[in-house]
Length: 427
Image 1 (cartoon, rainbow, N blue to C red):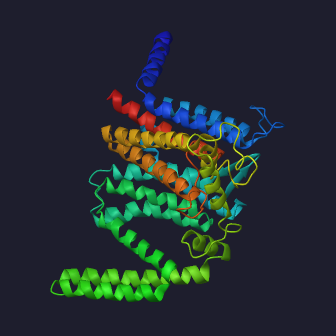
Image 2: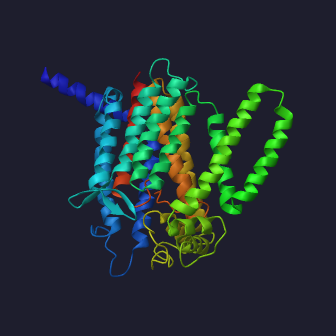
Image 3: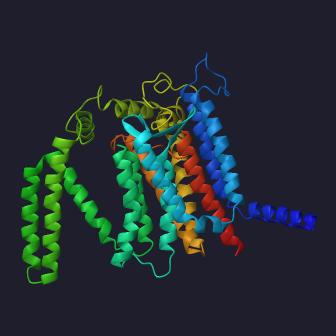
C-alpha cells in the first residue's frame, strides 16, 4: 500500500512539472542569467575575477538565486488551496512585518525599511507586495464583488492603501508607489476608467505647478473652467461634477505647492527641479542620471563588449549593480543588448497576461494580473529612472538588479503564477 501511495505521489510530481509553462520559466532563467552576468561585469577587476567569490555582489546574488529557486520548487509542490485559503493571512502577516520594521528596522538610503536577521537583510515592503496581491485576489474572487459597487470599491482600495501608508511611514516612496500598480487589477473587476483618468489629470496639474508655479496654473484653470461652464451650465449633474473637479484641482495646486516648498527636503526638491528642467546639476542631484545617460550612450549600437564597460566598472555610475544595472547592459551590449532585454520583459509580461486570461479560477486570474502589474511597474519605472524620465526612487529591475529581497519576492510571485496556471490546466 505504501509503495502504491509513493508511486502516486511520484506520478503527481511528474504531472505537475509536465504542465508548467516552460516558456515563462525560460524567460525567468534568461533574465536571471543576464542579471548575474552584468552584476559580475560591473564589479570585475583583475584582482577580483573569481566567479564564486561570495563576498562580492555577484557571489551573493548567486546565493540569492539559489535560495529563490529552492523556494520556487517548494511553491510548485504545494496545493493551490493552500494559497487560496491563506490569502488574508499572508496579507496580515506582511502588514505586521511592516509594523515591526517601523520600530526596529534598519535605515538604508534614508528609508527605514530593512530588518536585519544575522547577516541577512530583509526588505519588508517587497514581501508586502506579495501579501497584498494574495489578499486582493481572494477578495476580488469573492461572490458578487464588483468595483462598480461603492462598498466593494472602498474595501478594494483599502487593501492597497493600508500598505502604502505603512511604507510611506518608513520613508520609502519608491516601494509605496509600486502598490499603485495594483489598481490595474481593480480595472479587471469593473473599476470605472474615470477613476484613473481623474488622478492622471490631477497629476498633470501638479506637474504644471512644479514647472510654472501656482499663479499661472490657477489662471489657466479659471479660463478652462469658464469655457466648460458655458457648455454645461444647463445640466445639473455636469455642473456638480465640474464643481467637484474644480475643488480637487485647486486643492492639488495649493497642496503640491505647500508640500514642495514646506515639507520636502532640499535634496528632494533639487532632484525634482533637475528632473523637470528647472535646474541643471550634473555634479549634485542630477549626477546619477547624468552618468547613467553617458554610460548608456557610450555603448553605441553593439556596445563596448563584455567586461569592457568603463563608466560602470570604475563606479562613475552609483548603484550600478542595483537600480542602475541597465547602464552596464547599455554600455557593454549597446542598443542591441538593451533591445533584447526590453524584448524579454515585454514577452514576460505578455505571457503573464495570456496566462491570466486563460485562468478558469477567479483567484488565479486576479493573482496573475497582480503579478503582471507589479512586474510592469518595476520595469517601466526603472528604465524611466535611468534615462532621466522619472525621479530616482530606488526601484529595482526584476530578476536583473542585485538584491536578495527583490530576487526572492519576484521569484515567489512568478512561481505562484506557475503553480496556479499548472492547477488550471489540470482541471
